Picture 1 (cartoon, rainbow, N blue to C red):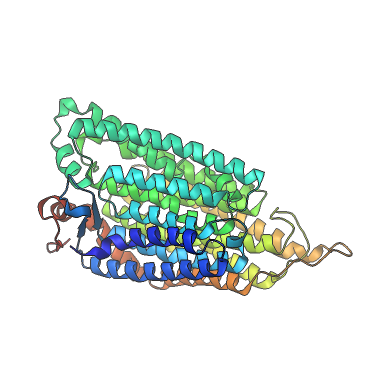
Picture 2: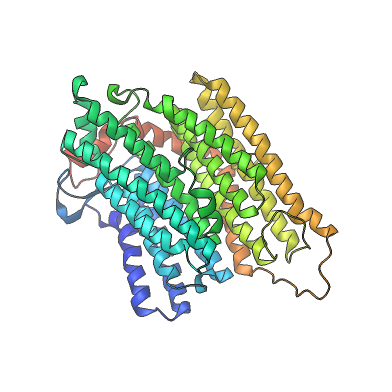
Length: 513
């Protein structure tokens, strides 16, 4: 049993209290510790991803208690990829927070940031539904502290709304866990996969109710329509680096749906038949349409970006709801793209805010660093809207290709292509108002010049842009890897065997997995 598996959770859990206790009043030391912790986290995540690349499934038993009685962490291709994505995203977000000074506008930013990473990493690595709930609560507590960082009435109101919606999700999660445990006597995912398959047809009511409740919980986390109301205000009012980190938060909900509904409640299971295509696919289509309509109608740049996140969630969920290896592979490729693109746009929104009186989409005088900020916005907008040649275009092609076998193929194509056109118009409108029409507006006489964003802020945004470019250049290799990932998800026998049958060992896949 390798102890590296628990490092992505333990490392930020140790760094956070150390920052509070030893460097509470020294922002410089906090920055050094936080960046160093994230760099080590990237190295560990990369090692775990390389270990899982050949299909190896790694099991870690806390306290050496075997499943299903003990707490287990499981590393496979999917979980390690999400851990690596989170760690890399965290580095650039942290650099931006330091460069822009956001981390010094309130208290305990770096400690809360590390606790947030702890919750995200735990959610991706846990092999137990109850501990998934625990890490969701860690996420909720840390994210609320980050949301209200630097204060303000608007931010506080948005934070309260965010907490209330997520507390509703937490309550539903507990009801679902209680129902599952009452029916099966276990909450370990691998053990549940075996037990749910043995439930007799006449005793499926409790399991079906639990499956529906879990889907609602994960839909709230993913901000899927009609459970998305908390996201626009919460993300728009949050500090920009926090909103950028939150770009991975909706993907936690998507990850949970993929994990639970390919292993515990797979599409061919009679107990939950019809759950995916009857409810999830229509909701995903509406999410995409509403998200991109919000992009077109937004009056502020930060809300435009928040609605684009809702639209990207809809695109991911369309692909997930088809529940085929091809569609899951497309969804995983698009998850990486939309996370990077959403985070980039939130940071660019803050670049505009730094050099402008506000982020209203109204013509105002030219901002400091106009050309560079406009160029970065142009690239990020192309990526999010799905225009060639960047990864958003390739991701949408993969999703459309996966939809060929669906009965709703025509609806999927119409809504995806129509929403893409609307998003292009929305981003073009925003860009022209912010950067082109600004040249026709004269600054007020005697007005103090607005400051130029820090160089480190541009470096952080440029780093995310470079990752989007790399995601495009290596699209073939990345999609090939996500295809292997999807194949492993739809053949969970090695995962189940690693957790339940061969505890404490590395499980090598059979040929073809």
